[in-house]
Image (cartoon, rainbow, N blue to C red; front, side, top):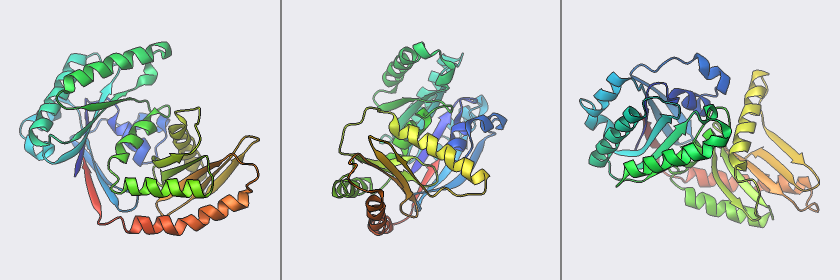
Length: 306
């Protein structure tokens, strides 16, 4: 299976890839130059899922080559297309033309591919205009994508929206995700947790969750990903490694701990009668079961992101 990461030059593809997979913080991406032709790197995700990341330069010359001389090579056997749009672009018509050329090639070579559109750099749009502009862009993209379907996300490297989009995309690529969710649900119910989240260890993207009690903040997953990833990076700068934390107040207790060799777990409890030690023992006891689940996941999967 293959994942294409495409979009016009300067749309922010390399910046988002560097933040999610290479531990950059947002301000450090300013020193990244334009991608010349194709940059690729191997990223291990969840231990046995290897992302062969191909970051395609979006300059006109390269884009034209993708649709002509390299067409079959690039667009054959694609599982996921991620197309990045700069919301501030002054060449919207050209951007849409390239996107449609991409879709035609996908339809011809990989009609079952999943398509994600990221409307990026939303931080540059006035806050009270963001909903309206994104809604308009989303409607345009969905209409242009027919007969294929696309899922749109608004993103920015300066807030948690980037984590929301990439968590949703990566979720599609995890081979045993239903089994993982069923086991997470059983674990949450046994320990009487309000909510349990599973994070991929390197990227801190949410890969699975189960909630027993309604929560108010719908953006909480990606906010936690963003906050803990920043904290982890701060720890590493001090030559310390982040292992676990407990946050407790009068309403709830939240525990974040290393879970399996490839994941962290977050457990949220609101029953004050359950002591911290009991929850930590339950997390420890569940580790072996989830490690076993990861091991029986099957053969190694290699994903190509171009």
